[in-house]
Length: 258
Length: 261
Ligand SMILES: Nc1ncnc2c1ncn2[C@@H]1O[C@H](COP(=O)(O)OP(=O)(O)OP(=O)(O)O)[C@@H](O)[C@H]1O
Ligand SMILES: [Mg+2]
Image (cartoon, rainbow over all chains, first blue to last red; front, side, top):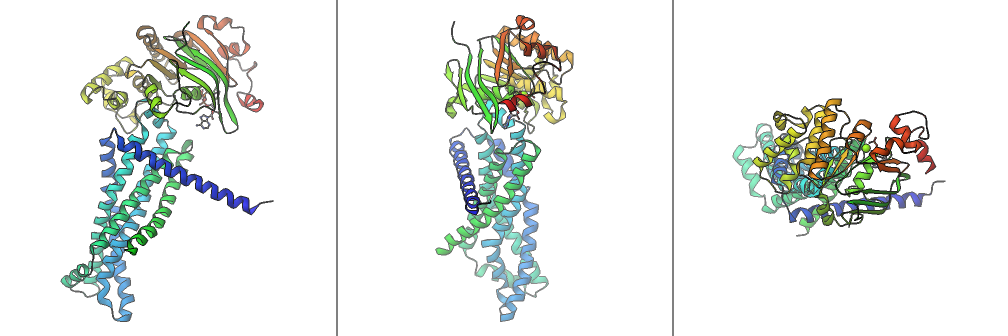
């Protein structure tokens, strides 16, 4: 007979164990990484990969989100004769919420998956073991540069996404909804607060860290064979996505309280 | 007699229910070349990884130069590993780096050489394993399996380590290149005085590179002795293995051994 308590207990314990492992992993990577030696080449490579090569996908996501947002908020707000709020709605939604979250999810799919696959392959082909035998700590050489690069580059990426997203709203607002270009721009900036942008960038840094941490953790602890790497990749993307949405609420709440 | 360079006592390692090593004892004397033979899946690679601290043994003691490896801290382990060079069975080359950086990786990591000196050293080491200088700037994926093996070998010896592990150094090489590698391993141990622990299935290689031979079966070393005595070991398992007979005490590979365990 299946004992439901046992099943639930198992699940809870398993989850706690994994969470503990992830936290320990991150703490170790940071504690060892900051002490050096530092590896600039992998860091630079990761920064370019995350910051530059993610631009197309994040930019596309942002522009369409801005466009849709303008259309939808116009439809909604015109019902109370409040169409003039469209520009403000677009910029606030994008900077505070949609820019970081959508970029985070996109980067989880692109960068997090790639990290898990790369580190997983390195684990399976014993390259991680080989690093250890060559006087190189894989935590410092592989994990720390990825964590750092993602945490630093995500805010940059999101800032660009914010600008592109607002441009999307601007295009629809001017071309389709009949706003004057100068008018739309003024309305965009009139009610925008520094805090909106800052909150979004803080989120971006947190999400970047989450993506890299999950990618590295799953890849580093990948199971054996191609199947192990596949599982690691899937887990990295799914767990990072869930954690991004959870962290999104927590960070929002923190900034909201102020 | 002083203690062996590597001294293993009562080493056990299991993966889940599968007991791979059980109470294994082995000595690798200083400056000698010991070869471990044994069937596929008997735990030869696991043995090497335990010594390097890449796998954590369940119990037992491994001493390198009298220093305990089992349960050693991370920093202590890093220090011990500096004395080792390792050729991995699958090569384990870094596929994101060109061949020369693979070979010179340990030298660059310890900042012993700058990049141009490391490049020169890599080319020189590649020459020792019979690879032309032109391979230095290729990527591992552009090489044949045998060439990758030799790059792995070059990487293992580039740092001129004290103790070198070779996990199947000649598998996948043509007979002539295999002989070149065998000579190289012998030179390394005889001339430089390095201690070598190798794994191989290739009896020609055993006879050429080994000072001593140890046979791993069922998680233990069941026979150990000088290479000259291997044909007169009086051990049925050893005889079956070196003659490559399908029938004998070792039957159905390791399945039976695993079940008995
Ligand atoms: N990390 C691991 N996790 C689980 N099982 C493992 C692991 N490493 C090795 N094993 C198992 O341990 C056993 C011994 O493996 P090992 O690689 O040492 O064999 P081997 O003697 O080197 O064989 P071969 O000659 O084929 O290389 C195998 O059954 C293998 O499946
Ligand atoms: Mg093996």
